[in-house]
Image (cartoon, rainbow, N blue to C red; front, side, top):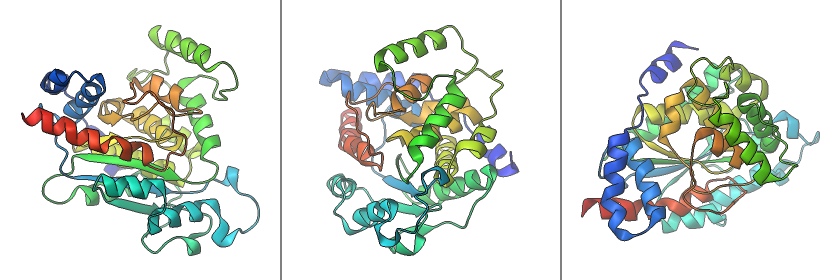
Length: 319
């Protein structure tokens, strides 16, 4: 790893179990297990018994994978460009939810197939061809987003890009050792995975002796947005910022980040169980979803859904 990534990883401490318990006790009187689960994640990540909510950002990172390349130029009709423009013009569900939650959206172009047709608000990143460079770009982005007063409390992530399903399946298989297809009975597959994890599977997050090289997995199976999202997660964890996931692309990045720095998993929040590879990812990361629903798009709407709950947790914790 580069010196920059090494420095950030070394700065990540364990999420605070004591603060997580204190935050939970402050909202327990509401009789809402959903808020208690969220308070635990926020308190532990922020190292605070009274979780903060006043500053948050939704960061959507776009990047297309070669595995999903249609082989022809689609121009303005490319799915990633279409979805990005819907966010920019306010017609996307994410944009509407973000407005309701009074939360800004930062849209990033980490390597889309048709950059000329991305909206003007998209922040273009220079091409990043190596895992270290992608991680460093995400780290720099997180630091820039965190600047300001009050400090950043919550970073909600989203992703856009064709081929991300295949990449997430490959990353899930490589880092968990679990068949990534999802073609069998989902409950049976999850039960099998949890049993393997409880036996101390070498692929389980937190096992320092695991022989799996997350950087190599990123290089082989990740897309341009995967490394940037993983860098965002690592930097946020180093600054005690809670990170809200949404969908399989952000889950894949979380697996990479946790493979590099296992403690970063303690800073993650899963708003929903998701679909496709996401349930297996959450089981591997040890995350319990706030909502028991499965949203599949992953562009950040799932994270936006829980931001009003973040406000409730913060309000209850202040009382």
